[in-house]
Length: 334
Ligand code: NDP
Image 1 (cartoon, rainbow, N blue to C red):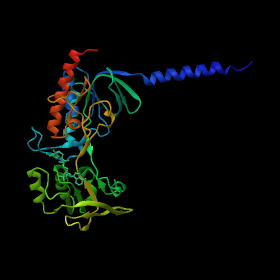
Image 2 (spheres, rainbow, N blue to C red; image 1 turned 60 degrees about the vertical axis):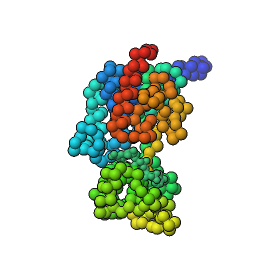
Image 3 (cartoon, helix red, strand yellow; image 1 turned 60 degrees about the horizontal axis):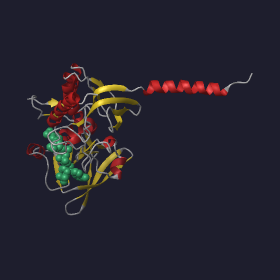
Image 4 (cartoon, rainbow, N blue to C red; image 1 turned 180 degrees about the horizontal axis):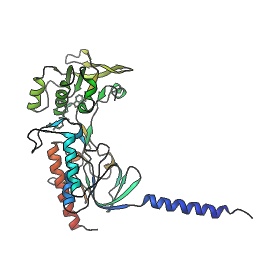
């Protein structure tokens, strides 16, 4: 008897198709929150309390930027300050207490062309979301030098709290003149032998309080008007920095680590072509609201805020997004 290949292939196709259907089955969600910083968790607390059953995807950096901060001294309600990571754990617990489904995973693609919105998680799982709150925050910028890239993780870092420990009693440099740079320099000064603060202008952009702190720390030396030309090193990692000074003179400082603290860029890559973004890539919102260019999609926190960028303003805008979302769902049920 002849073997019937056609039948067999059909069967295989049928089995594969049903497996695919099982794998591709989409989940339906009323309110999907993307991001787990203060904006995302505050949106979660409010939407959960409004019985919207929010699902929150934490993203690549669960807890967001604050988990890489040491002490937060300016968040109202903490007279003695609080560690960034501890605050994010508290916010997460508070969101979960009201029923937020907090999930480990990263949103990798979105289709906001019609409701329900199609959101892909980790490249495979598909979710149909009636509304989306985008709170993906911002990430650290780097200088863009080839040598910086070469020594990433071998002496080049953008997080003193994460990596400072490895440079105890050594000399290091922090690049930047804003609050982040001053904060990083202060933290490192408590661990390291000496900290150079390399500032490209002849003044600091940081708040007066932070300026005073770095200027009054004995083992911080501020190098005004200096630009980093090259990261120097060998097979064991960073050994120094080649700088250009205000008089165009080149100068080498011997350091074992370079901490880059020159600001952030918004995490909006997956929203390009889906939402209106400004020239720097921040999501545009309708002033006085969290509404984006797509009805039913809201943005909160640093992803839409190039001006204030504080934990407290992010949390406040997360609250706005939740309220906007709740009202939108009442007026636009699916
Ligand atoms: P900022 O944008 O305020 O400062 C960036 C710094 O990096 C500036 O000094 C800038 O120099 C410098 N810089 C930028 N690009 C380069 C480059 N290519 N080479 C060398 N230097 C460069 O960013 P921050 O991250 O410091 O702060 C962001 C926001 O967060 C601010 O609003 C800040 O107040 C806030 N913040 C508050 C904290 C707190 O209150 N505890 C802690 C940390 C941040 P230039 O001035 O020349 O442009």
